[in-house]
Image (cartoon, rainbow, N blue to C red):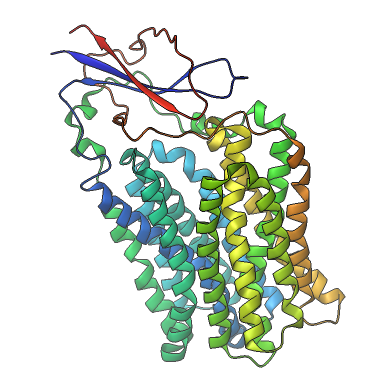
Amino acid sequence: MGRVLSVKIVGYKPRDTKNKVERECLLPSRVKPDHIDRGWAWMIVLGCSVSHMLAIMMMSSFGILFVPVIEELGTTLDDLTIVSNIMYGATYFTVTMANPICGIVSCRAIMCSGGILLAGAFFSGYFILTFYSFVCMGAIAGVGGGLLISSSLMAIRNYFDMKRHIALALILVANGAGSVIGPPIITSLLDEFGLDGTFLVMSGIYLHSVAGGTLLRPISLYLPWANKIEVRERPNILKAYRVYIDKYLFGNILFYLCITSSFFYVIGFTVTYSRLPDHMTSLTHSLDEASTTLIIAGAANTFGKLVGMTIVEKIPRLTRFFYIGACVLSGGSLMTMPVCEGVSQFYAAAFGFGFFFGNIHYLGSMLFIEFFGPDKVSGCFGMLYMSYTLASFTGNPLAGMVAEMTSFPGAEFFFIGACIVFAGFVMIPSVCAPNGQFGRKLVRKDLESVIRPIDIPNINHIVRMAPLEITDQVSDKETIYGAVSLSA
């Protein structure tokens, strides 16, 4: 039986003289896996979307719990923000540490473990609630949420190729849904069952992420020969983290600008969701109105991400300009919070903050790809989430210091708004930088996509690549597929 070596050749800008073989696979010519872009792959998307939604739901609604917890424990907001710092920091740090090992450890096991941790953290709140137990609950919930986010984003890579953007878009919708439905659910449960009952019911809701994890079928069910591949080297978890140590990134000034900007805009996100409910209730607004404000911010955030996707698709060269403008407008919306009096004014400010922050979140990620190329994505996002972690631990303490130093109510929102505006100013020097040498890749839809790389028995996977001679000039905006026939 003949065999075909399928290769995918990607061309870059003229300054990059190397034609790169990005992906290759060696399969019998009559074999075509039936799990890619169809069938059970969409159930994988459903499981990942549910788990991702529940993790974001926990992050966006955690601040709602501060109001009843303050009354229950007789503590202050500044004390409880420590819990928020730990929860957000644990989430982002866990995502950073879990991403490299998702290719070694089963994503199903990681997702189920995250769901159990998240549900168990809230279940413990039903039996015991003290300040220190609440701190532990935030830390464990953060670790569980980080495992859910990481596994849900990494699981689809083995099941999608041409339709991967659709799968990611569906998970993006789930992200927005989590930030929208979280606050009203928490508020309704508090009114109906009180604080203890809310912890118990939320534990059951978060346990559904385990059900989402069970939908992740292993690829070996579809590729029977996958378990028969000769493994020459055992997976090394320590080696998986080497992707975060990239001399090229650490020697590039644009990398430090992007990381610094990310640090400052995440301060605005974590502090807003932690302090806004308490700020509104202190101004005689109800907890339901504060919850609605967060709903509007979450819905606007999702809409802003969709707008950001359109900007990158239609006018990619203006991405950095839109990013800077979105930082200024999002931060400016937050800076109006202290002068808001009526609930409609809070709704308008929340919409402006959420919409433009959604732009920031998506466009900021795309800037890493524009500046450093797709090959550096893993290293970039690892350091990106590390900056998120630092921002989570430093944002609330700094905002608390500002609030104590001034007598003006809501002064901390001036501070976090200024942080987001500064995040945009940091990126102004990038405007003078040339366009990224890694042009945006467009896959030709009239050609069949490359099958996911996998080996078959009795094939040396280290020396299986045949020499290729490329004579035609490769466009910087096109991906070309080719096939080289090999002897039987």
